[in-house]
Length: 191
Image (cartoon, rainbow, N blue to C red; front, side, top):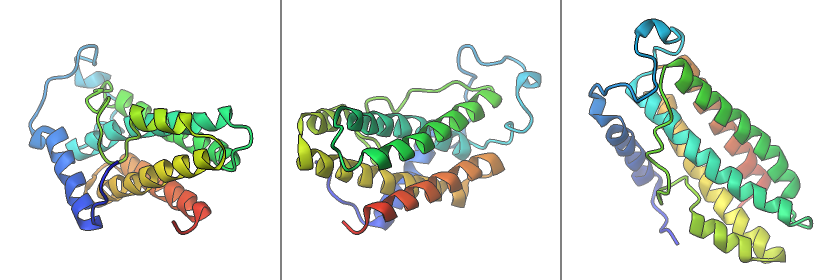
């Protein structure tokens, strides 16, 4: 189980992760299969800064891991989280589609660099397996704890984008994620 970090430490960790992920702003060659010429890149997405790209690249595995957790409710017809999970799943899928669209319009591919990482905002395979073996109320409690942590961390990353990002479209995605997770956390109530 992860240890809880103070909000300031989490925000600094997110900022540091964005710097590391972006290579401290250094120019990197286009990934294989990316458009070779700037003319092939959508001008509306060409304004994605290194911070914007890192944010979008992190949204993808965060949302994928959360969707995998939400899918577990389909195997538990009596889960109290199922109606909320269905609605939240729609939000996550729409955000995921937008993140992928932003990368594509910028002429980038998903990096996959966070795949399998145990980092804030990601629900790990081990955590999914543990939730998958729980039943009844224990299942709901375990899944709620995972989704609560994921939502809080997703808000931290989204707020970092809102503070440091430069692309209006990426910042829109950040605002959408921040709002969606705030609504979900409000539905869950106090821990």
